[in-house]
Each structure stands twice: as C-alpha cells, then as structure tokens.
Picture 1 (cartoon, rainbow, N blue to C red):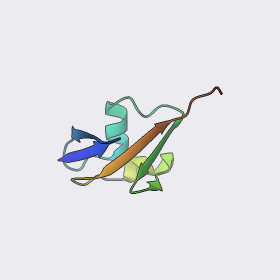
Picture 2: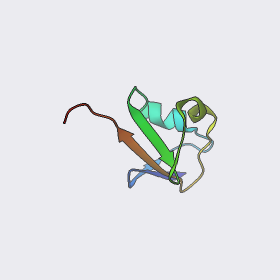
Picture 3: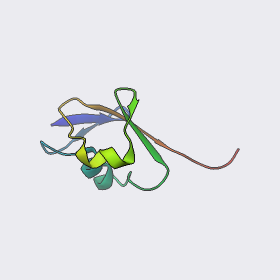
Picture 4: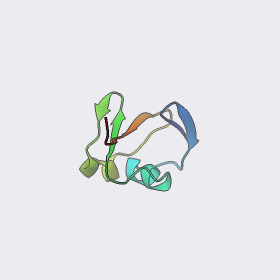
Length: 66
C-alpha cells in the first residue's frame, strides 16, 4: 500500500504500523513528533497505530539552537 510522509510517497506492507514504518526510515529516535491527519500520535501509541492506504503522515524533528 502507499502512504505519504512529509509529502513523499512510500510503499509499505499491508498491516504495517506507524512504529514499523518510522523504524524502517530511521525516524523513531528521540526528538521526533508525528501526526496523522493533524492529530499528534503519542510515542506509546505508534506500535498500535495500523496504517491504511493513503495515510498522510507528518514527521517533525526537534532541533536545538536559535
């Protein structure tokens, strides 16, 4: 199935969880905020969030500095 992460299309297996996809892309470390449909997904809920075809995901990396 196809999903979009930050407006880039990715092909993932049917039944993939948000945690699976983030880990495969190296986006599961500290400092990442993730939203699906403008709703933030808590880190504790990522493993139980099953993705569906066409899911729109936004990933933001926090950085220090000013």
